[in-house]
Image 1 (tube, rainbow, N blue to C red):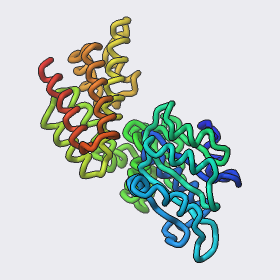
Image 2 (image 1 turned 60 degrees about the vertical axis):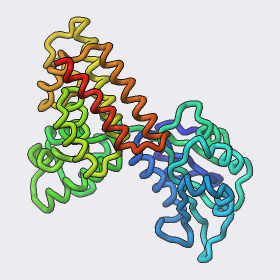
Image 3 (image 1 turned 180 degrees about the horizontal axis):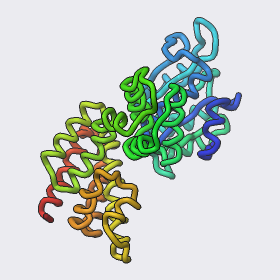
Image 4 (image 1 turned 90 degrees about the vertical axis):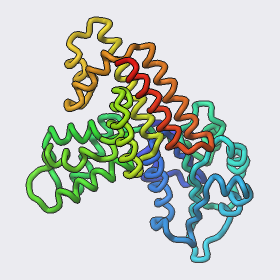
Amino acid sequence: MKLKPGEVEGFLRKPPAALRAALFFGPDTGLVHERAKALAQTVVPDLSDAFRVANITAQQLGEDPARLADEAAALSLMGGRRVVLISGVGDKLAKLFADFLSDPPGDALVVVEAGELAGRSSLRTAFETAPTAAAIACYADDANALLGVIRSMLQEAGKRVDDDALEYLRDNLGSDRMVTRGEINKLLLYKGDEAGPITLEDAEACIGDSSAGNLDDAAFAAFGGDIPALAEALAQSEMAGESPVAILRVTQKHAQRLHLGLSRMGNGGGDPKFLAKTLGVFWKREDAFVRQLRLWSPERLMRALEILTDAELQAKSTGIPSEAVTGDALLRIARAARVAR
């Protein structure tokens, strides 16, 4: 079963009775985990219940493939249906899951978390074609979805928010659902019981040097050729627990925005600063964005995007530490920017 975006929320609230397994995949690891957890809790509300929940990594499953069927068929000592949670899965285990889904033993719900998978992924195909399984894509929130998440969390906490603060939150969050929720919770803690709406000053004070801001800092430092600032932004992101892949994706988005800006300028796009506004660049970064438009050419930006894409593939598929791969890619871009100054 392959779910459309509009079907996901209903599926998570009330999954089909015959469902035996679900695959959550995509670049937004926070959303992958959030949705996997939500589905699992429809069977076992307390996922710390060791009698009814089994946690397995892809590495453990690779070393002991029989464990998938064993855990799915196992009975809970305390009664009730069990959940098997499996993380970090990729196409290497596709055949194992295809065989399992052809005739799954027991009645446990198997919930699988994976990273980004290609359209022709054999793992995706196994879940999409099995009658008792489902595959759910998890992509970073678009502007409307992100605003919905922010408003929902603030309303649940009984907080109002000024329009300019909401705009700031939208522009500085959203690369990862888990990060977004963590940052909003931090903002709520910062605001505490203070009366009045959340202001732009509140949002800037709490989120301004947050993980999302650090990701943008890294992207702007790299394409501006500021190596010391890049090193600082990467260090801050690591301290905040940011995923190196999230850094790469935000930097890719920045490069794509620069490329689109240059294309519009070439077609008579008008004032570069106004162009930056139309492209959704946060107002405090507009001047830096305009300087970078003058620094890069479309051809060199395409090469930078190739470097970032290759780095993401290496981070996901090789044994090289993803932090090292990300740092090297952004440093290469920063050096290229310095040469072009």
